[in-house]
Image 1 (cartoon, helix red, strand yellow):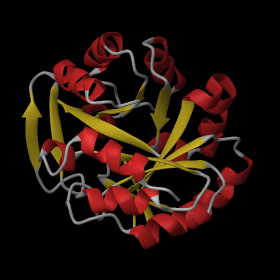
Image 2 (tube, helix red, strand yellow; image 1 turned 30 degrees about the vertical axis):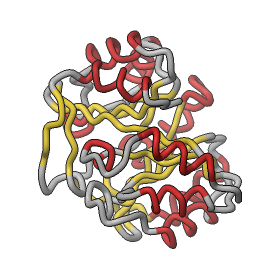
Image 3 (cartoon, one colour; image 1 turned 90 degrees about the horizontal axis):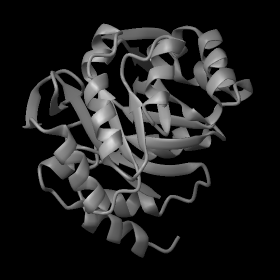
Image 4 (cartoon, helix red, strand yellow; image 1 turned 90 degrees about the vertical axis):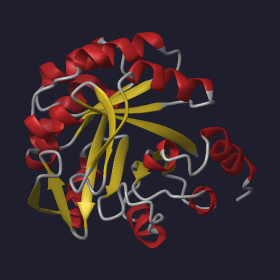
Length: 243
């Protein structure tokens, strides 16, 4: 199981939100330095989101994204505002391991198919859910599409990776909803990375014990920034679990 530190970019700063909207806390004015820190602590993958892009639909922090990718030796997955093939192309050309698409792909599965056809396994789909409904446009709007319907549509999409966020837990430090995670993992055969609610090493331990072959990792944000535990500690707990 990968432990994937997250960097959310807003106005060029590293920030975290609660449930995407309730508050914003700035953790650093130097995203490159933060990225290097996670690499030094043992990260094998970095999750990078342009929140300005997610909210506006247009990439706003591509320059910083490029600097981060160039500064690291580990792979980086990038999302936020990637709503056309040109935007995806720019991120991949910058060196991203994966381009994460959400709003456009959920509203138009034809776009998802085009992206996968052109970029293959470099495409990951972001599924952000609050209950049965999906959220789009940087979580500012609720989609009419339900999670179960989308997962059925994805069975023929040749998609390799889903990044699933439980919005009700994101940034709350209230713990992962393990039952919801299990349900999600059993609803698809596509590889899944989960996000939302990690608050302690107990959460890491519970996730590491999940017996689901398509579960590939967990994204951790606020718990790391609030020093609930270190990345090194999370990695050690994950590696110590024998399923």
